[in-house]
Length: 233
Image (cartoon, rainbow, N blue to C red; front, side):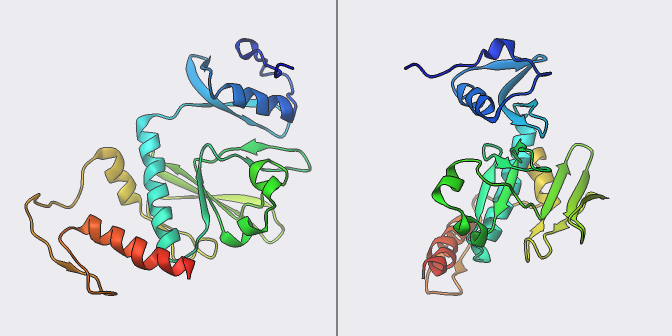
């Protein structure tokens, strides 16, 4: 029996779509192209009222911003031995609001190891459960603004605007600091540091007898041979 199809060329954004229809539309978009109001779209979110919310393709600077945040978060995840799970905008979450399913895909997310290990195999591969978000950041590198979302003691979400400066992860991301200077350098391709390609280095690993002539190889060694190895033991 042929698999059901949705007519992507005639989507009605004023109607309510079922969760099954929503999944089918995003599945078809993996091999199809679609434009909404002149913008290419390759993914939809589903709001609490069952309405489709188009997610336009990201610009190169926005993707560079996301990549830099993922890099910083990934380094912290390994170096502090959190061993959690990091996803990007292709990782959707069920943000249930008042019992109504809302599917969203944040650009970057972190799931603690303790939370991920409690999920069943079905929950890991479907949207079977809701999401209890403890901390959210909205990063706007164009206007140099940051908004922090948290829950108060009653469980209600509140938002606080911050100036463009480093952000601490607090109790949710212990010892993590998002360095905005690194984001600026990523999207401007201008570094505050200068180095010579012919500069000779000698870096001794503080945990073993290995010696390295460049920072990249040294960092890779520390990650694979010391930080990651401690996860597994």
